[in-house]
Length: 321
Image 1 (tube, rainbow, N blue to C red):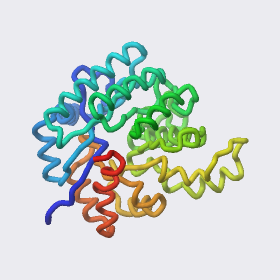
Image 2: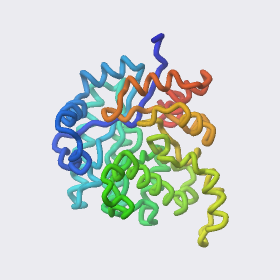
Image 3: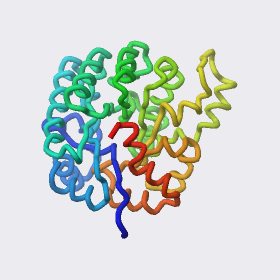
C-alpha cells in the first residue's frame, strides 16, 4: 500500500494491573487462547501496540481502561480509589510516550461529585483529553438531574465523554435463550444507543448545549434513525419538549467513531446523516484488527477532504491536538 494517511484513534483500550476482575462479565465467554492474547495486548504500551500503530499510520492514540472498569464496582468509596489508581497508572504510561498517547479518564460515576473531582484532577493535572465511561453505574443512567454538576463541569473543561458499551443492568426478556445477542454483537449497541437517547430526550444537551458525547461502533445505530426520531417524537412526545428536533443533536452533541464497523456503506450513510465533521476514525484495539480498520478507512469511497477529517482533522479540532 502507498504512504499511509495520518490517523488518530480514540477507542483504544488498555488494562490497569489488578482490574481484570471487573472484566469477567465481558471475558467469560472468550476462548482461553484468545483471552491470553488480548490480555497481553491490553498490558502492552511499548511493543506490539506501537508497532501496529506505525504500520497503520496511527500517529496518536487516546487510551482508555477496558470495560466495565469501575462502573462494575459496587462500593462507591472503593470506586473513587480504584479510578484514581487506574488514572495514575495511565498517566505514567503516557509520560513515557507523550507524542503517541493521550488518555481518557476512568470515572467513579456512582456520584456526580466523585466523577467531577476525578475528571477535574485528570484533565488539569495530567492533560487527559476527556473521559470514557462504560455505560450505566449499577443501573443508574446519567440523564438523571443529579448528574447535572458533572455535565456542567464537562462543559466547562471543554472535553468530551466517550460513552462505551456495557451489559444491560437487567437483561431484556427478548434475549432469553440467546446469549449470542446480549453482548457486543447486538445487546451492547441497544444498551448504549438507548443511554445516549436518554441523555438527548432527558434534556441534557438543552441544559448543557456545548457538551459532546462520543459513541463508537458507527454511532450504535443512531445516525440511521434520525429521520424517524423526528417523525415519531412529533406524534409521541409524552409531554417532553426539546429546544431542537431530536435529529439536530445527533451530529452536534452526539459524535461517533468508526470503531468496530469497517463497512463503507455504513460510513457513507453516517457521513450523509451527520456530516463529515461528526465522524472520527477508531479501531477498538485490541478487540478489532488495526490493519483491517486502517485499510477500510483508506479505501472507503470518500473525497480526500472528508477522509482527512475523519482520519485526524476532527479529532485534532475536538481534542485540541
